[in-house]
Length: 308
Length: 280
Image (cartoon, rainbow over all chains, first blue to last red; front, top):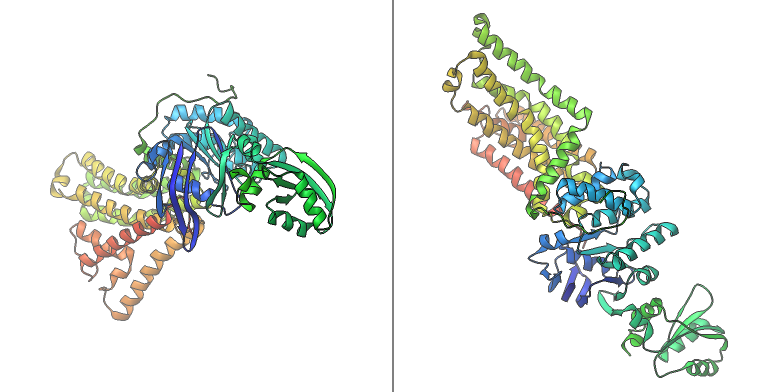
């Protein structure tokens, strides 16, 4: 679907992408990473907005350097920041985007009505886009990306600024597109639940490189086990001890931390380390691995769990 | 399928060739302005000089007493286009100031350029909007006046006596429209505020003209007319209409100034119209 081969993008002295080589499979793929990891830069490079210093990129089998217009006719792009065509109401705006993508005017208008209903803006489609709330603007960005029925959808932080209800509805739409409507999509996000809810495959980025990648189920299901742990004692020091011993640990919203134990090791190792360092274990319970564990392991632990 | 079906469906209809996007942009821009009453009012006012000139042609053709002082010449058409200058200025600010500035304010460039629209097509589409309206208040009324002159006089004598007039009108209007359209579109790409762009445009024209007048007063010569865009247009326009140039500046220099405006504007547009702004 999308292939990058040794792609490097440099902004001044800052290397946004550092020799990235990766293949995006068909289906719903999450592009996950903290802010500044290079996710948006990768999408902008694939759209032809940014020219890489080195490397080759192919989208839908076409070379980005030579076939950019042909590629852009077959993809939909939902940008991260607020963007619209000024002075238009929603249906005119979406139909206009359809025409720009090559649809005849009548078909573009009909598709505009349809996708606006689909994204939940049917009742507000004659309002000027500039009067829309943040959540509505996110939806109309999705509508303009969908109107010409793209073969591949790039969604850059699609739930930015949305309230919880709107966010759930947006994620439901994206899930529906990827799983029921067979639209290939690449979802860029720094929010783990968004990717976990909507995608089957994830590519984790950090500091302009690919940290780990694979099917979410496989990444969550292999390479050791996860425990919830609560202790009494010097927590930061014990986290350092665990990491030094190869057990990745990270805190949660509560006072419970999650410890990733690699394959071949057990909970006894945790007890043993606690005993050695004078820490009381108050709670230790096996847990189900989540994408967050994979993410933390990839970003902070160098992907030891995924690679083991 | 009816539009109340709220599910998403695949599209299997016709798709246009990728290269026609500029026409979509131009058409949308034209329709957007034509739907504004204030702009329609401005266009109507811009045609009032045409009505006055048409009356002049009618009187000169039908009343022999009036023909002695109202008889048209090539100078009549040159004067008419000169009088349209104020409307060219107003329409340029009204239409041109927001052409790209508004898109930059709304982050629309990344939307346009994520479609099968090249930067050149985007710029061409935007320029076409302004160019069409400028031609509609310069070239179109001038050519209609020429047709009216033939109709009122009932002969082609005037046209035979001024064989180069159609070419002169067309060439001068095109030159004016190209220089102004390039200049305004480039200015519009420099800011996110259309008001600021309008002020910049007025400032460039007024300041360059004021500088020319000040230098003329100091030096007592019009050889420095090349510092003014308007004076350069006038100078080249005089030659196009086969009249004596009004300034002492060589016409080639005036033409080079206009060419420089176009080249500089194209360079600005090449740098400013991008899908993403990279701040290194």
